[in-house]
Amino acid sequence: MLLTCPNCSSGLEVPDGTTAMVRCPACKTVFAPDDSPAPDEDEDYEEPRTRARRPARDDDEDDRPRRRASTNRRSDRDDERQNRDFDPMPEGEERKKRSRRSGTHEALSPQEKASRRQAFERAAWGCRLIWISFVLFMLSMVLIIIFFFQLALARFISPSMMYITLAGILGLINWIVAAVGVGLCLSGPRAPGHWGYGIAAAVATLVHMVLVLTLVAQGREVGVLAAESTDVSRWELLPTRLDATMFYLTMAVYQEQGFTPKGQFIVSMITGVVEMTRTVLIMMMLSCLARAALDEELAHKCTRTAGVAAGGPGLIALIMFLVVASLIETNAGVNLFTLVLIVAVKMGIYAILIGVLFPAFMAAREVDDACVEPFQSLIPQL
Image 1 (cartoon, rainbow, N blue to C red):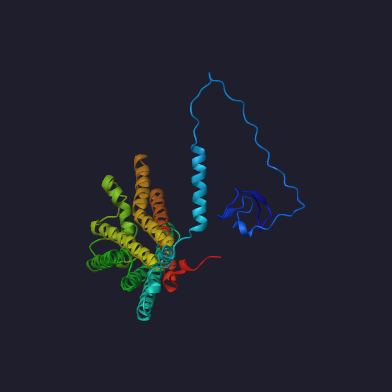
Image 2: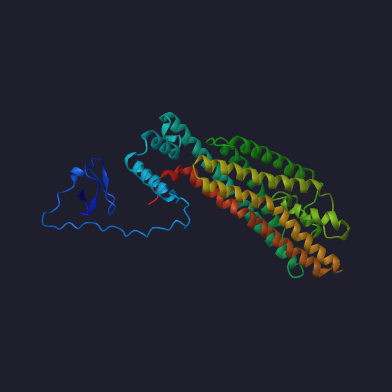
């Protein structure tokens, strides 16, 4: 029996008396035999040509049975296509997929939505204070670099301790602002790991502030500038103690060579390690806030910046160790040239500290934006 596709008018031959749905091989349209338009009487029906059969094999040839796997696979594939055409996805499964994409925010009551909105607002302010504290840290590093630049030109100009004092003031404001920001982020929306990283960041912030204030109050440990200037101010202990960690490799190998700051230095190194740990935990807490705003890409970015912050002290310690080792092993000694070189290296190290914290600053700003406008990933992208 010859049928005509109602869509593309293609002719197809089916067994006589067929009542099942027929699928056009040309346009893939599925139709009933009754829907097929009657063929024109004037058209000449051309009998399909029969395929020429191969000559029969001799009995001496291989009589192994032929495989029909390809035919079976083709029929299974056709059945699968037919099931796909006539068996659409159940509404329950489609609804589950939509609920997984949209999260649980739509299922909340108006009061719960308002409470969650306030939690995101608190988290946004906390992130804002955190990235402001990062800006203050980087500005204090710039002031210290300016002082070291003047120190390198000590024969021509007198270094001004005003830059160190300003850096210390910025450092004090930095630690206070960051502590408030951590507290606000801790009261933000809940996400996996939020309480763990948040409480750990708050504890690390408190321990770091106690150690820094103890160093400043006692005045027993000196800063990095003690080896270069006799007018040592306690303000230099406030901006950062990450600079103290750059000497731990040098002190372990070349402690008696005169390239490390004089005086006690152990608590300063511990404070620097706690400062690095504090930054890492803050970034991990921000990654949880990004995940609460359904921004997985930003959460991974915060995790990567935490790794960068963790590798900063090790990098600057390695650089200082290599420079000191090259000077000692070449018998350069402690002279004007080596002192100027050490000062230049320290300037570069403070610049590295800025570069290490800059990705954290950018990530914190993005988390701030994500908390201001959460769930942006649910909006379809055109």
